[in-house]
Length: 439
Image 1 (cartoon, rainbow, N blue to C red):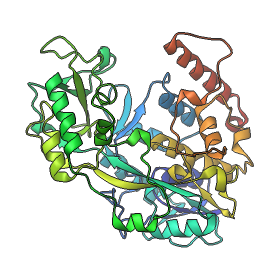
Image 2 (cartoon, rainbow, N blue to C red; image 1 turned 135 degrees about the horizontal axis):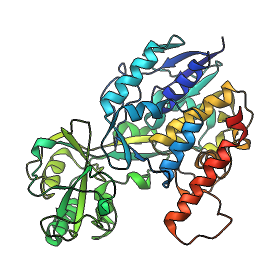
Image 3 (tube, rainbow, N blue to C red; image 1 turned 120 degrees about the vertical axis):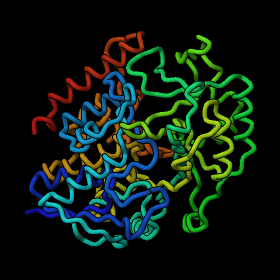
Image 4 (tube, rainbow, N blue to C red; image 1 turned 120 degrees about the horizontal axis):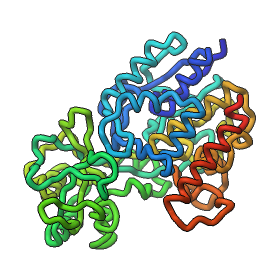
C-alpha cells in the first residue's frame, strides 16, 4: 500500500486525504489543533470554516457554480457533504459550519486507511508529503518552508465578519427578501435611510482598529502587508469614499423595503449560520475593529439596535506562496520534489477553490499524472485556476473562480446571462470529453 503524509486537516487536506484513502493509499494526516490553536479557529474539528459559512453560488451560470459542477465531475468528496449540511441561502451553498466540520471529522477518523495525528509538524523531511496548512500556517512550519523556497514567500492579512443572535433582531425593521425576488428569500435585509447610512460610514471612519500581532510583524518584518480585495475590512472600504459601501457590499438594488415599496438608500444583509436560524452572519462586514467599537457601530445598523454578538469580527494572518516562482507544474516544490503544496497556500482564494487544489494534487499522485494542465481543458474554471498557480506574474496574488479567467467564446454574445451560460456549457462539455475524466 502506498503512503502519503498530509499536513493540515482543513478543506484541502481533508479532500486530499479522502481521495487518497478511497484509492487504497495509507494516509497519515497531521493537524496541530487543539494542541496549538490558530488566531481564527474556534474548535478542534477538521475542515472548520472560519470566515463566511457560504461556499458561494450553486448556479452553473456563475463562476463558482460552474467550478462546483466541474469538481463533481472530477469526483470531489467534500461538496456532497457540504450539500448534506447546507442551510437556506437562496442560490448559494451555505453550510452549518459546526455540523459540516463535525461530519467530515467523523468520516476521516472512521476511515480505515487514515491515521490522524494531533500534533504540529515543524520539519519537512524526505517522506512523500502534501502541505495543506492553509492561510494560517504556523510560524514554525512557515519558517521551514522559507528555508526551502527563499524570500519569495508572500502573505496578507484577512478579516472575518461578526455573528449575531436571531432573537436580538428587530423584525419590524429587518425584512426577508432576495434581490428581485429571485429564488428563496433566505437573506434578511437591514434598510438604511440616507442619514443612517452616512452616520454609519462616519462611525466606521472614526473607530479604533486592532493592530497586527507583534509576533507576526516581527516574524515577517521584510514582507509587505496586503489585504486580499474580496476580504477587505468594511472600515477600509468606508475609508476609500463615503459612497463606496452603498455601491458595493451594501448596494440596495432589487431589495424593496416592504414598509416603503422602494429600495432603501443602502442595505446590509444577514445570512443564516445554521438550519435553525438562531444566528446570522453580517454579510460583507468582515472587520478588524476593536470589539467595543464593533458592538457600538454595528448596533447603528437599522434593526440591530439591540444586537447580541455570538462572535465578533477579527483580523488574522493569511499566508500563501509565490507559486509560479517556487512550484513545479505538479505543485511540488522546485527545491524539494517530495513536498507538494495544496489549498490556499498554493495561491487560490476561497473555500471551494481550496478544495479543488486538494482534489487535483491527489489526482496527480493517485493517477500518476505528469502535468495536470495537459488534461484539464483551458475552457474550464478548474483548468484556469491551475494555470494561474503555474504562470509567472509581476505581482502574484491568490485567485478565486471568475469568468474572466476563461478564453473568449467563438461567437460574440452581448447578452451577459446567455454568455455565461455558454461559457458553462462549453466547460462541462470539454471536461466530460477530457482525458482526466476518461482516466
